[in-house]
Length: 199
Length: 104
Ligand SMILES: [Zn+2]
Image (cartoon, rainbow over all chains, first blue to last red; front, side, top):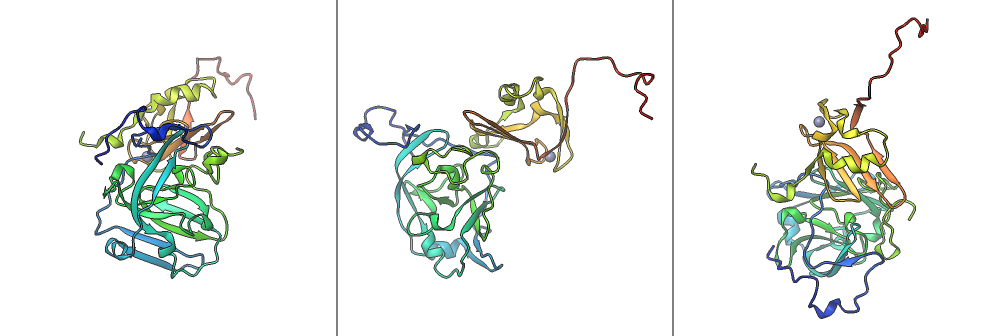
């Protein structure tokens, strides 16, 4: 990934930076995983949006690459308490992917290659708040960080930004995901420090 | 092993501390059976992923989730849905010999 750690000192932006409560700043990119890293060949990769009435919209890798891309620069906040500021990504806005999707569902269950899931309200995926990203720092996204493509929802704790994303299932009822069924907060707003159920 | 570093995991002994907080016995010595493939083996032989607060213990044979443990500041969540049962060794104790345990 070519990222050189700058250490904890010596960057002017560290001074006076406002972080969510309980977070500390890092300059490397820690890897967290709940299992083995899946390897998905691009010719077999597919992304899908499944609507609440059983219709499925699919994109191959080539089709994803052909869509208009954006280059968001965002701050990341992990529930393990590290925050990383100003990360540069390239990917497709979910507004673009949802453009032809007819749905009135309020809930989304994101699912990944390897079996991971996470849930969030559909409105948190729209209006410029979320992307399917495939580049980090100008390079293709490494498998350790969720490549070939991951969800990026930077306004929520990073466990919501599912690595190795495979699809989004739209639901009329909320369906808690992998961590949300094991004590993590259902929504996960870092600015309200919603780490655990009951926070 | 040709597995890349990012697949690194610890063995199930990493569960000893967190489980000792909630059980009176050392659960890593218990024999558990995997729901997914039926393998029976010591909890210490599971593959444990992720730093706290969330630990995911996977079966060494099929890689499916056997046990999850999330440590919050005031609670621990323990999910054993991937475990058929745990056989927990205990110190020997008087076993009923039948004469005093007639349930017929
Ligand atoms: Zn198994």
